[in-house]
Image (cartoon, rainbow, N blue to C red; front, side):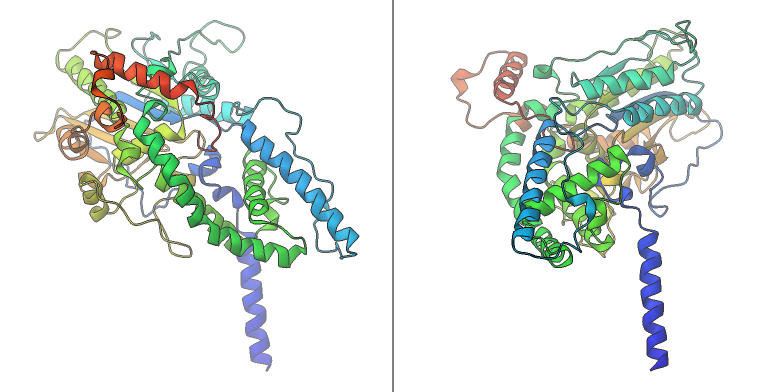
Length: 493
């Protein structure tokens, strides 16, 4: 009997220690802050940073998501409804003379921290710091690329017209060019951030104008909700039993959303997040990862095929850098970095186009446009985690290296995800790939799809098409955006 009791106590102690070491901030899918995410990379999935001697970087492409932001208007309305419903649940329990001993004190009379706000979704101070510090680190890491006098043609900075993305570009530029000017005590300098109008931005906001993608997403969202229902129902039942309140499935979903916002934006982890056990958090995170996978990632080829214009832009910039290097163009006459700031709907498809976070057989499947298996349910491990794939300020950098001593290939591409070298399955698991091999094995299979063929709505009548494909694209985009006032309603944006 004593031995059994001892084993039981050891088991409980072990579980308590595991729970105490659990950090919910590492499990928030695409609402994860960058400072948490960038140190989370699975060491087994990160390649060693082995740049051969004699190789020097000659160009950098950056595709980054905006930094941490406040909840958008849709989320704030949901939280206001939650506050109202929690009040109803408390009153109902009191009227029935039910004990409230198990109900956390903070839930009684709780109001949303964002109540009364009329606007949302803006970059917050933490988000500014994420991009500012990223700019400093990139300048220090690639000092030989950023040693020239700033010129917008040498270091173009591009962003979407969504304020949190353009503000992220500004914060990054302030870090990148800090102490490079003469403005104020911090010696700032002015720099340019350029944007395309939403109706024609098929490089950074391709999802906005892709009619077929919007149709696919609209059809799939109910199915995704169905996939998530068993998780929400299981956890709702546990919450009802644990706290004695008649929570609904919607309450559970909104409480999880509140947990993510509190932990990411406010650094509060002992309120809404404290309602859930670590195993429940793992399930909720997995459900979010499924949604990201199906609607933005490898779940369907249209999710990333529509990002081909961005991939082409990246490759073109590297080819121009190689030409400038071969022809020995004078300093200041050619581009050294192309720096882009957008959204999860940009970074996730671009990550998929590069074939990151895949096993070998999975890479072959996406090349053949075959569907992949969904990320496995906990406790099984998985490569696809939104907290790593697309956290706030998450980014992919493609660094072009010149290796003149290499007889087989003079130019190589290194991919960094959240500043860490990451293996490319399409390049035999290496993070340092010959440029021609990168183009042949990773890029070329995608180029059989142009944006127009991927995104053109099938219901268009031929006689209604403008003669110019550019005009056609613009016309469709304007129609698509005319009634689309929900572009900022998802956590991933």
